[in-house]
Image (cartoon, rainbow, N blue to C red; front, side):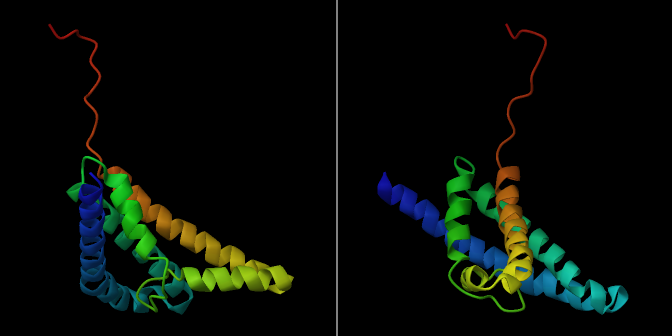
Length: 149
């Protein structure tokens, strides 16, 4: 049973990374480059965060869809792999930086505003991934007022 779970989690991690990389490099990045001049420099960070949220939601949906009997443990296993490193300009997730920022904010209150903005962005990003996984679940049977006989 444990080997079966490890297989599901390993498969979800590989599938999640492949999906995220394909979505990020083939869809999100060209869309960002194409639309950034229209929106202007002031809206670029907002657009990037929004597109990152959409990419993560799509990735969560793909991972969850391939693991329909229990999508959430698989999505959470993939989400755990996102917490270990900085992804640079492609993806706004950087949990190690968030932890260092929290440590700095404990020592100096000047970092609190930056910590709040960064934590909010991370909540939105991981929330989008989880929302995508939740949307992939099978729909329940519709309710009926007529008794089936």
